[in-house]
Image (cartoon, rainbow, N blue to C red; front, side, top):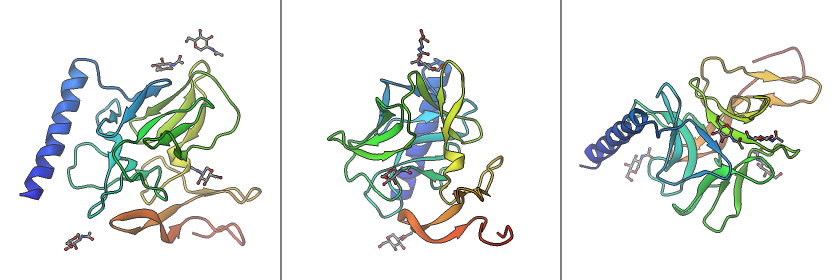
Amino acid sequence: MGLVRTINLSYFLVLLSSFCLQFGHATDTIAAPNFIKDSETIISNDGEFLLGFFSPVNSTYRYVGIWYAKVSTTRAIWVANRNKPLKTTSGILTISKDGNIVVLDGEKNIIWSSNVTGSVPNRSVQLLDSGNLVLQENTTASIIWESFQHPSDSFLPTMKISANIITGEKVQLTSWKSQSDPAVGTFSLGISVFNLPEI
Ligand SMILES: *[C@@H]1O[C@H](CO)[C@@H](O)[C@H](O)[C@H]1NC(C)=O
Ligand SMILES: *[C@@H]1O[C@H](CO)[C@@H](O)[C@H](O)[C@H]1NC(C)=O
Ligand SMILES: *[C@@H]1O[C@H](CO)[C@@H](O)[C@H](O)[C@H]1NC(C)=O
Ligand SMILES: *[C@@H]1O[C@H](CO)[C@@H](O)[C@H](O)[C@H]1NC(C)=O
């Protein structure tokens, strides 16, 4: 019964998304002061990826993540607030006054931020067909932050695993703690910068 209901809901979401697409309301972009709240999603232009709020299996905590829109069984391929879950369904995702992508709880506390410094107006956040979530400056279309540079545990085509030898900054995959907890777990896949490049 539970399983059937879940599948129906996903099916409904896909239907709803295509309904919205048809009437031009579905969007892959959020621009300040717009936001999405729990139960709302944005969808990549090609309809492959959804960004929204979810709870992992056997968990009631809420996370902002990206998942495949057309597959009812896949779990999130990227999670924003993986180490700091929302305890209620009153969270929102928006662009803050300082121009960052932020997840806020019901009391407007920042639960997660893209943490880019330097205030730039006219930023918008877009979910690309590749599954990459990008924060960009509208007038120059320059990308300020992207989820592909901050992956969770999933590797997607066109993503690059890298390490900056000078800053020690790494782009690496890290496992979830468990199926019900996307917090940073024990395993990581990246390039070691200490010796010769090593995976
Ligand atoms: C979820 O909970 C059920 C019941 O306690 C358990 O049988 C199942 O293994 C759990 N699933 C995961 C992925 O932890
Ligand atoms: C942003 O900075 C805070 C405080 O330094 C840190 O706890 C948080 O993990 C950072 N978020 C990201 C997405 O790096
Ligand atoms: C922001 O965008 C608006 C409308 O697109 C434009 O008029 C304005 O000049 C932009 N501001 C900056 C600082 O780029
Ligand atoms: C930025 O671009 C998006 C997408 O074209 C648009 O919806 C939004 O209104 C723009 N934001 C500003 C502040 O100009």
